[in-house]
Length: 220
Length: 220
DNA sequence: TTATATTTTTAGATTTGTCTAAATTTTATT
DNA sequence: AATAAAATTTAGACAAATCTAAAAATATAA
Image (cartoon, rainbow over all chains, first blue to last red):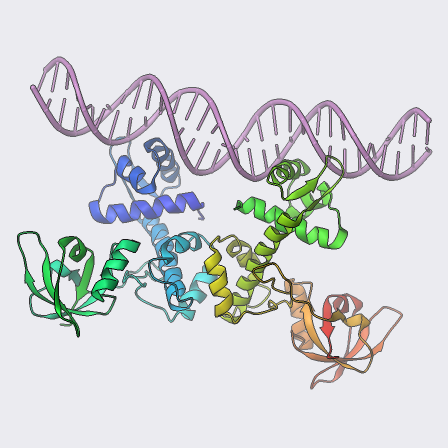
């Protein structure tokens, strides 16, 4: 089964939303897709006809197994291309998203497989997000939110969820990138801000907003 | 100015046709695009409105300077991606065309420029076709048809025009590829076939049909 | 040079993905 | 539970790119 660019964009978007909430509703998908609720309804009918969606009028919807596999194929391509753009073409990681949005719709399966090999079969993209394999298997990493990390223990940044230029600027300021080692020294309950020590730097304070988007892991 | 995928495909196709014939006519473009004459007429109006085309009803048409530049941008992208697919992803050269047909429509200019640098700013694609630079300048090569090459002089294969799987198979059989050195020993007027000697191999005979699609160059 | 054939264009329909506005269903509130 | 608010769907329209069938222009040939 093959899909149009528009179908793939909807499928991918539904996938991401249902990861958070289980069942997805029309308005939130419309907001995420920057379109109108009526357009979403039209597409839902189409995807249901193609047997990718569990959907009943007014009752919300989610991808079935076939839909999830289709979504993971797109996610895989997106993340592999992002990896390529950053690792091979030296793009800054905040510039690659929109280009990968186009590249993810190139259809050749052989292309994806060869790209994967060329890149050394990476498990995580430049934002730290896991890259599904060709069967849709997602590598797991034992990560948690920086705000939930234990105090006074060295943790490693494994993923950053907000990929805006503003967030990147912020992280550059703090010298935080994927792989950076951080120790959380203290958590302020007042505003959720954290006092942290970045490897080889003085202790500093980051806001709850920043912390929420940074994920870390530690060994054992 | 930016273009839809369909517009780009028409522009590129008109460019190739007018290289051969100067003025292009509706039916030949329809045949090349595998569509109907009526669809071509529709698109011609659109491209004329966008000031890319010299076109008068019933009188044929050709790209103006803006149209040619647009075409060369697409050709450039196509050939850079073909180079990438063959040199980096190890595709056989007869498999890359259809994938490059998709990749050529990715819009980011920065992507193309970085890809160009990553590939080492190649001048020719894997078929030996010249890759226009970002200003639309096409590298020239002093090449001629193998059938017109002087006898008993070592020449180098620079380009192969027929890119079908059948042709590739044929050339593999003769151990001919881009860069292969060949000496034409004799030309048979009866059927236009050539006796040639491929570097490090015994002399053999190739048909006029094969020879017609092979282009070569030699120094001075 | 008139008739015929070919080429090209127009007119109107179709599909995909989108939209607005109105109608319907569900949810929340008094 | 009745009513107001919010969410969702339907109905009908539109733009892009295509199509078929018919009309118009051009080219060819008797």
